[in-house]
Picture 1 (cartoon, rainbow, N blue to C red):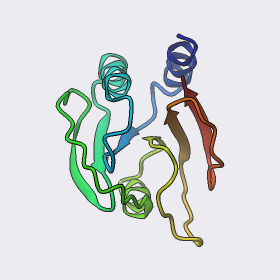
Picture 2: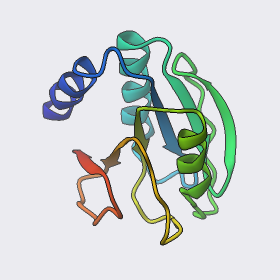
Picture 3: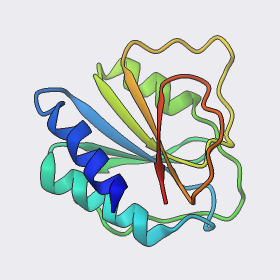
Length: 135
C-alpha cells in the first residue's frame, strides 16, 4: 500500500497542473488489476486527467474514467510519440505506466515533469525523469 500513499502525495501537490497518464499496452504481462486501480485513483483525484493508451504508437486518448484497457501481446513499445504528444499538448506532469523496456529517441527533450510508474517489483534504469515503483 506504500505506492498508493506516494502517488496520492504526488498528485495532491499537482492539483493545479495539467496532467496526463499514459499506459504502455504492449504486453499482457503487467499486473492489469493494479494498473486499473491506478487509473481509478487518477480519475477520483483528477477526473480531467487525460489517459493515453499506447504501445509502439498512440492507440487512444481518452479520460481516466476508462476502465476497459486493451493490452496487446507483441511486446513492442516506443515512448517517443507519447512524450512528443505531451510536449505538444502542454502537459505539465506526465505519468507513464510501463516496464521501461520500450524505445525512446536519444535526443528526446521534454519540457514537463515525468514520472515512470513501474509495476512488477523490479527497478529498471529510466532514461530521464523520476521513477515510482509499484510492488
